[in-house]
Figure 1: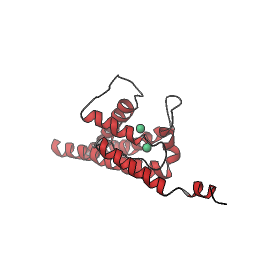
Figure 2: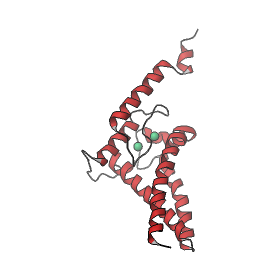
Figure 3: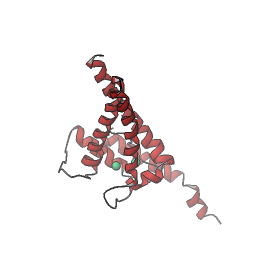
Figure 4: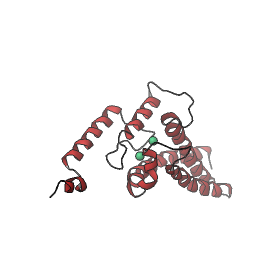
Length: 171
Ligand SMILES: [Zn+2]
Ligand SMILES: [Zn+2]
């Protein structure tokens, strides 16, 4: 097997994980597993938050693939390393660059890294399950586009108040 195919599978899994992470964040974390993800939209007490369980969860397929990788399936190793690679990129962008859980003093002012930080800050502009924007990481939309989206979502909520607050005013 050529090194090129190994690399293509590795890079392909990094891209695939961005899609998986986007879907998981939008529909699972801000969906039926909001109970775990909510901790990330609230101030953290201590070094860890319930949301960190997602990192543990994503490490499982990576480890299984690498197990098969060392037992005769080199492409499984490429896939496992791709998931690990994405995890490391995510950890660097999300936990170090944006949330500064380890503060190396990195404060990007312009360019790609600054855009990553702005896009995820705008994800945290809404600290609730619904109404959030920007669920991915390595392809950050422009802050201008995200702000327009946020405004549109806000307006939609104002137009359609949830049934609880509505019934509170009912006789
Ligand atoms: Zn979120
Ligand atoms: Zn975050």
